[in-house]
Image (cartoon, rainbow, N blue to C red):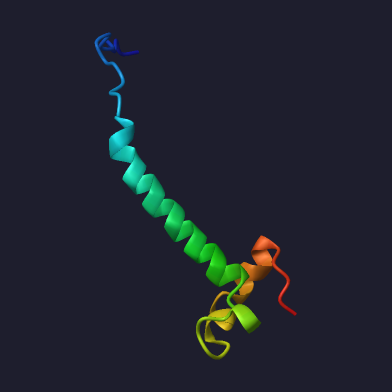
Length: 69
């Protein structure tokens, strides 16, 4: 067995909320955009013509429980 000495001076570093908040908002907006394209990009609410987006995210729709046909 080896003797391993742990440093007792290791303390967690606090990250200010002001540094996290812009990234959290950006990630939230990307998440909302992804949910829109997976869940609602079809029919009357469609932003892109045709069924290209629907077919691209088709399996994801079923995985997340969105009905599509």
